[in-house]
Image (spheres, rainbow, N blue to C red):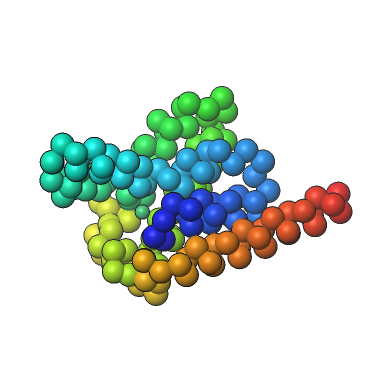
Amino acid sequence: MPDWVSHLLLGYFVATLLGIKNKKPVYIGVLLPDAFKIFIPLMTLLEINNTILMNFFAPYHTVVGVFLSGIIVASFFENLKTAYMGVILGAFTHLVADSFLYPWGTNIWFLWPLWQGDPGTGILWSDSFTPLFITSLLSIFAFTYRKVVESKL
Ligand SMILES: [Zn+2]
C-alpha cells in the first residue's frame, strides 16, 4: 500500500472483524515494517545517502524482522502475549498489503532469509488512491458489521 492511512485502515478492518478490543498493538504493528521511514527526512537533512538507510533497515520489512522487532514493541504493553499477537497481526497485514504493490512491492524480501524470491502480485499502482479507496470501504464495512453484531448481543 502506498500510504500509512491505507495500512492503518486495513489493520482496523482485520482487527474489527476479528473482534479485537485493544487495537493499539495492531496499529503499531501495521506501521512497524515501515517505521524506519521516519528517519528519511533526517537522513536527507544530514545529506546521508538514503540507500544506506534502506539497506540497514530492510530486514525489518521481513517476516523474521517483524517477529523480532515485535517482541521489543510488545514489551511496552501490559499483556505481552496479547500485544505481541496484535503487533504480529498488524505487521502481517502490512506485508500482505505491500505485496500488491507495483513497482516498489516487487523487490521486498518478505520471507528473507528463508526465501529471497518476489512474492509481489503487482496489481496495484502504489501512487494511486485505489488502495485508500478499497481500505476505506473495507473499514466502513467492518465498522457496520461490528455494530450489527454488538447490537444483537
Ligand atoms: Zn512496507
